[in-house]
Amino acid sequence: MFPRANLALSTNTFLFSSDGSPFRRFDHRPDADSYCEALYPFCPTGDRDGRIPDMKDSDVISVYRLQTPVWEFKYGGLMGKFHIMHDAIGFSSSETGANFTMEWYELFQLGNCTFPHVRPEVYPPFWCNQGAACFYDGIDDLHWSQNGTLEKIAEITGNQFNAMAQWVQDDNRTGIYYETWTVRSDPGPNATVWFESYDCSQFVHRTFRKLTDLGAKLSSRSQTNYTKIYLYSGEPKYLGNDSAIFGQPALKNLAVDIRTFYHTFRPHQSFTDFTISLLEAYEKIVLDKSFYLYYNFEYWQLPMKFLM
Image 1 (cartoon, rainbow, N blue to C red):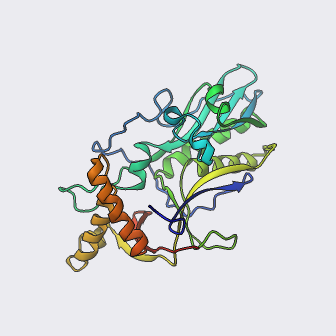
Image 2: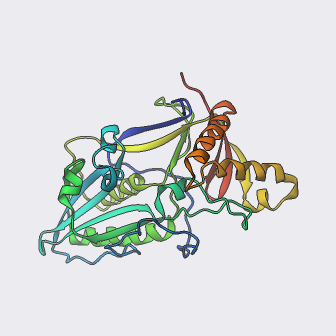
Image 3: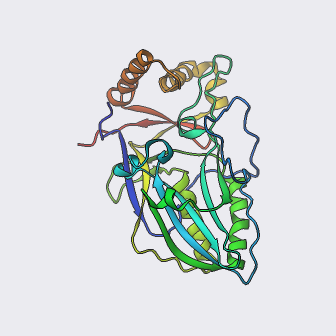
């Protein structure tokens, strides 16, 4: 339904670089609201707070680049054929033989991080959009290598690993919200990036950059393609935060329009409702060339572009 001009999913090629994200940082991670429920529990076999065990200073830790198709557990390698990948990092201790996997993803699934719930009893749209690091025992070789990538890219010392682990704790406590969209002016190499995503691949970028800062030498046999979901837009228009938009009678029309826009993307729709919602989304995004983006607790209106 959506032409390439408005909604595009593609891959970017990165060498181990920083993300440069302007995403807002916080001084602590708040408790998740009980209204938010995950269909699949977050970090079921690991530490939900991202805590990482210490390694001996003398240990040598192998570092692995891990990629697998998104929703591989449900669709197998299907998403991999479209290069839609999930990213993680693996570690292996030479002294103990223990293996570990570290990844960053949504607490309440991707849909909840991309669109809010429109609740009758709560006037502002209600977001369940936290993301966090998960560290757990083992590397599922088959899971990562069968349809994706499992590649050793470095060896680090126990000291370097422990310093990285402390950084992960700080990063996990202060960077807490998942952002699906990357918003650019156009697909070209000199495009303006209006908003950067904050997702699993960005966590991998940050971690690789930190390891490099700690003295690690990262080397890959091939460039790494990371999945991005792009929106192409003219210069975004700032609208305000929840209290400014949904607490001011003068902005009632804007508040209603935002709620109506997000209601189109509500979960658990019947086939009939879903069909109607697709038509409504097409009218708003494609015909009216408008998209509401929630970023850093503020709303922006994107004048969508048609790229031929």
